[in-house]
Image (cartoon, rainbow, N blue to C red; front, side):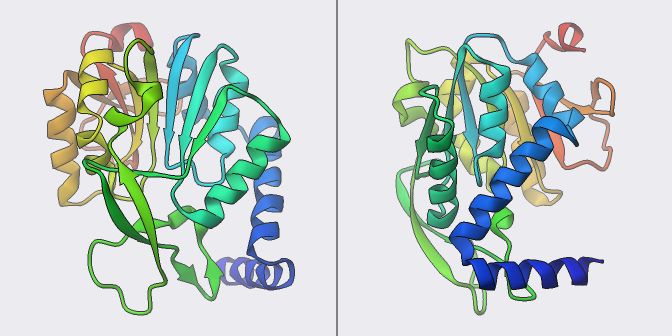
Length: 249
């Protein structure tokens, strides 16, 4: 089935071109998420977010999650970050089609310092896997490299005082520890709810150590509610400020 799917994706990308393919894909994904196959885990994250404040979508990809958050939290500002040009352009086009001045988009990667990073869009059977775009940290043979600008979240205007930051969604393909290092001031002072993908490798414990140091509990969604993390095999985690777990449910 996966081989057939990749074949269809390859043909569509070749016929439509990557930009049109991604835009049609994102419109379909948005329709599905809003009306058909709703993601219970992601919606639970949204349900925990206060009604007013700034929300960061870090690793916005094509913009679907940012739009869903904005539609569910009409009094919040959603600030999205997507550094890969082809994804950023699709995201910008989606935001422009809505339009909504509560949606803000930066063509930036977030990290622990200002720098230039090299990123790549992996390919599988000739198909551009836009959702798996990642920072290249070691030499990768035949990787198509893209140079992007990075900056700490602590230096983004919407995330500095007096703005109230209420939530962060982080999906950055094994780069989350660096993102959080660059957001220590925001996280420690404003205590936003954090929904974060964390890969199961040696960087996982570093991320968890940082989260605990900043005063957060580590939780997961069991399909119905949040429960403490006890080494379950999961990819997505909820980081909630200490003592708020009992009220979150």
